[in-house]
Length: 107
Image (cartoon, rainbow, N blue to C red):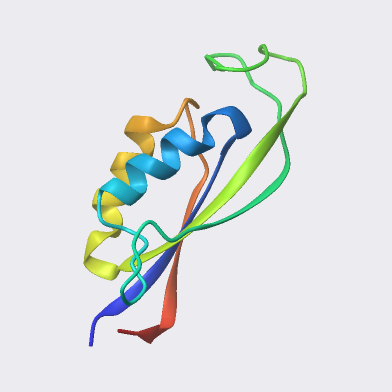
């Protein structure tokens, strides 16, 4: 049995499909005979870029609100570091928020 993790990332809505494809094409999001499985929910991300930041959206010193998608995928535990790197390589933000959670169920 393989240990699983859930990877969660938020991304501007306009970039969600591109990021979801990059993650899925790496082999993440398998469930039985299905591939490219993910879950998304829309929300509003808020951030305040500080001096030294190079924001993709907004400007330093100004509070920003962006419609984002929260994308969740499940993968084998030994894949998570590679998938996080894929997310970083395909994400428009300078500092994407990426969470990795261990799961109690395994395959």
